[in-house]
Amino acid sequence: MNPENNPKLNHIDDQGRAKMVDVSAKDVTLRRAVATARLKTRPDVVDLIREGKTAKGDVLATARIAGIMAAKRTSDLIPLCHPLPVSSATVDLVLQETAIDITAEVLSRAQTGVEMEALTAVSVAALTVYDMCKAVDRSMVIEHVRLEEKSGGQSGGFRR
Image (cartoon, rainbow, N blue to C red; front, side, top):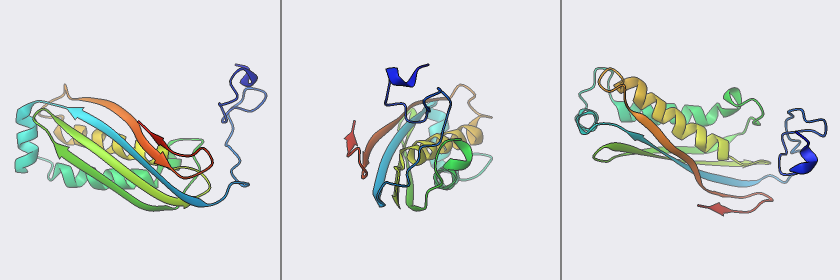
């Protein structure tokens, strides 16, 4: 792929090879990102989670902690992400009738954004719910993993 055809691919050098973006000239600013995901399951599984009756323990607390840990370790999982000093990471899980809605908010004072940290947080939280409930429902579906909003940095804000 010729990067000149798409100058927005900043993780590709002029020879078409993957590279880590140089952020050394960027200012340190407050960066914020919010991401969401949804895990669809059966109503009886949602009831088990709500009542705390799953064999592996408190699903929501475990998924929340897993998501926060994932936000802090994103650069270990995504090869070209910069390691960032995460100032705050919150993960909220809301039980619906046949789904769990997951939202993560990540903040950092850094030279690059925290979108990947928020997306990783909701993904790992959803995977944790799946892992803890798969004995009851292997047909669960993780869907709609997406960035909802971001702020800070040169490119400005974004809101879905």
